[in-house]
Amino acid sequence: MCGVCIGDDVYWEKHMKFRSDRWLAATGLLAAGALLAACGSSDDSAAPSSTTETASSTTSASASESTTTTTAKSGGTSAESVALIEAAVDGGDPVVCDMEMNDGSTGVSYIRGLDSLRADLDDVDVGGEINMLLADDQVYFWAPEDSHSVAFGPAMAAEMDMMPTVEDLIDGDNSVLDCEVYDGDDKVFSAPTDVEFTVVDDEPGMALWLIDDLESDDPSVFGQFSFEQMTAAEQEEVEQLSVILEGLSPAEREELIRFGN
Image (cartoon, rainbow, N blue to C red; front, side, top):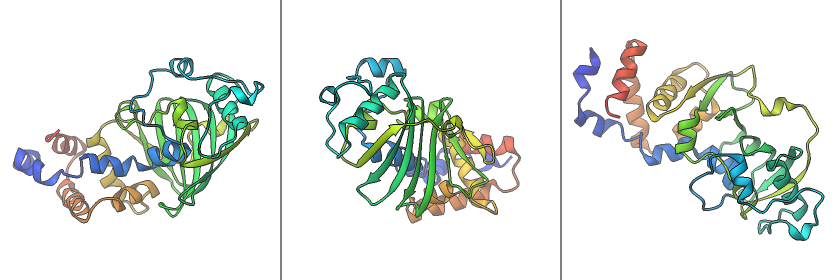
């Protein structure tokens, strides 16, 4: 089997560089940049295990409390918006927020809790609209024109620090949020039914998805953007690997790409 022919440590050390921190940063850029950093990411590297734990460790305010008791915000978001976000995370009404980022991107975020939120962005880096949704412990990415895309499972989402804290949503200066109570359809907190998502939960799974996506007749926006963020050498290695995977059965592909893990 091909996996035996080339499945040695020397090969994987040479040809799997794209499974590096640099590659993970590229594929995770929309998660960290679009929602957390854009909404104001803190320096916290580990997310609490539950919404309750996070809310209890953060100054919580209901929308009706005095604005003088809410968390200070250096990025221009009003105290009223901060209070609405804190209340939503603490079990109150969901909120919708207009966003303006300092890189020129704009968008709308919907917050129902730390485990249920969405960002629809007109992103200057992507060159168009991109959507990110955190639901059911998975992080979904897609663009309006996509028929298929990718979702990160709980393990990979945790590894890449995609789970936000309250501070991530309100404590930063990378964006300005203008929020109000959301009374629209709950479907914004669910993955779209007209997009087929492949759920990946580790780096090999992501690599296999990316190669398949790039080789499809209609690559997803997220896959193309991830590939464009790689260096020329990393892109070449992905292309070389895609040639090697041609003609292999799904089981052989899994064995081959996971050999170097």
